[in-house]
Image (cartoon, rainbow, N blue to C red; front, side, top):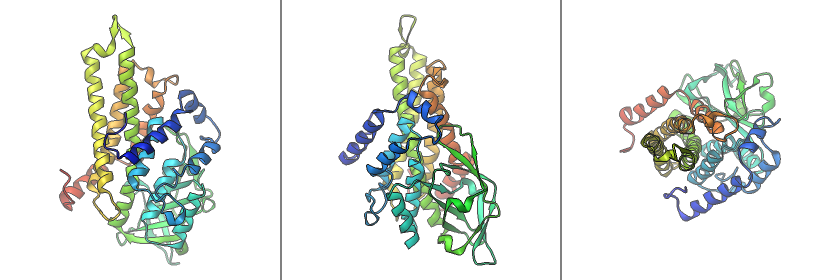
Length: 370
């Protein structure tokens, strides 16, 4: 299935990325990658970089492709379809935030490194788990509980986006991995994306590490645009699981006929299709509206919430249709089964996402969602 809402150029990009993944990604490959030392193959990462996918929405003046967020989201969606683990999502989300930040030579230098193939980690804890306060030295001190960060140990640069507790502004900061020495603890991940605990409590951020100090709504919106990439990945996962399950229902026979002939199975497939369409349409609408100057976060919050809920719903239903085989290591669906919940959890608490939607629509009266 290819999204009918795509333009001809977007359609070509989607087919190209999908074809690249289809050449080598299957359940055996994903299982092997999950237990490998790095969690991904460096030569595949170099090829992704050579194709320009990791720097697709970095400005052309810095060597990137200068593409739109919607085009970056197409790559994220195909990444989700393949359930492929790599620092790609983390790097593109980091590039999105840096590209939306106020102009700064250090931001440009970091983006140039990403164009050259350096993986990056974005530390932007959902639910304001980490905050900053001004310190006497002119810098900032961070406080909060440890947070899980994807591909932190693989990153050559780390970007922090945290709220300042006193003035309602947010900090954008660039930190080198060596500055975080002793604060990083690798942890087993729910899915095949490598993760680590990062304890920033008491971390002193020098003033020269701060890239920008921006109003809260501006930072919120930059993060919302980055979160649309995660939502797009989850939409891709929904589409892949739905297609695999529909195909299985046509092939698997019971009582002398395909199980798709039974009404109960058809109802399961219909609910999966409805959930997938809800996530896809909300995400597509958000990508159209989420231009850099729009500052309308309501539809983005809806898209992220819908994608997370739909992905979990779709994989749970798929496990029922498959008779449980989709949760075993012998079937590729077990990667989606675990990734769905992991990706939803990385989006933060669902109650907080609903509060964001309420605040945007009711309190601030943003735009016209419906």
